[in-house]
Length: 482
Image (cartoon, rainbow, N blue to C red; front, side, top):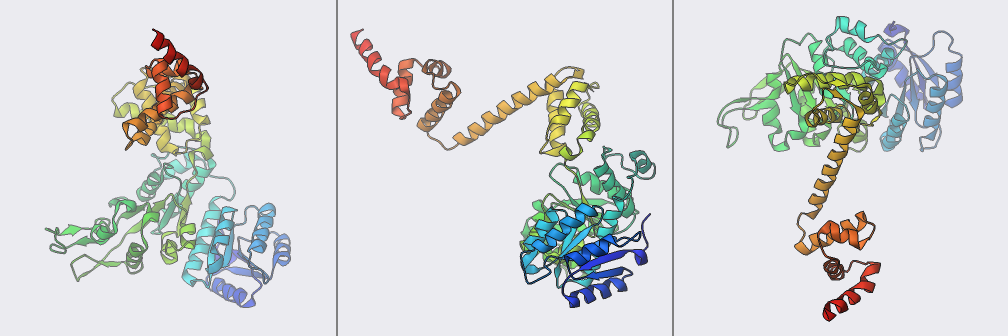
């Protein structure tokens, strides 16, 4: 059961007393109890002697002395994780040390914030971290229990990491909180956004999806806010923007990490004021939308590198959902494969196809760098190329091998683009020499040439071969005698 705010305890570790007092006051004003520590030993003593009350969160500075390496904070975080693996940690850092904090997040910290901090953003981050931690405490709800109360029909899987994501959706879908979905390409970020919308009070309204990577900067305002007739040369009629279309619904901003800095400012302004102006109009429009965004990039790193605005980052990630890669939930692959195959058969109006145990085992062993999208392509390709009602491991192995050969040939053809005929000839000879380990008889046969013609071409292109020097002169003399 989740604790009430007043009973949630936060450990603050910083050698600067002014920082300790400022954080303690801010957190107390928002209903949290705090314990203050100056450094590593005092912090570990507080954790070990906290008794049954324990701590719910630790805020740790990266440095406790005059050092600026960040190693002190990372060492403390590492020890906390060993002894108290369920305790989430937020790292504090100065702007000049953000890259160290990003390193800490990769090592297991829940997140980081910079000093000086924005009070509202920090409280938001604390709340989000506690919500995320609460979904991973104790026993995960099983899939059946979740499906009784929520519509997760399009999401396939029972892996604990996926169930943790679904449990968080169940908690936040009914709110208007902004959600940031992180995950590799092909992990199903759009399906998660759909699930949030379908289980929200806004489900009856439209969910508008925008690929931010496809919106050019010159068209950003027209696409997002709409334009009035005559606003620019080709504006022959009024046009609604995505914000207007999504009013009282959900706006899904996919590939948010692709947005440039100038357009980030425009988006932030709308999220802050809930108002915007149609391009070519002086009238201010109010908007009520729930924002869900997604990216396969690490936004925290983009913030550290100055590529993404920190204030927009905190506006977008009140709740963060990190989707596991398919290789991290292999136990779900058979379930996914069966569901995807059933849908593919329906879409092609084909009889049902059964995936045999050997096929499911092979599919589960693959790394799938393209995740669910790549798995679907593999299933679709095999379904179309193999006319069998039962698919075995061998069917997939053969189809994928043929596909890889074709892909390799396409890559080789791409490398030939722009080459002269002589350059192409040289490339083909070198490729054949490699394939046949320099055996000229086999190379000549593969290229459809006589050995003498091959010798001449090897000389012409200055391709080294042990046989050429020994044989060219002899074969030339034989031809002259004949």
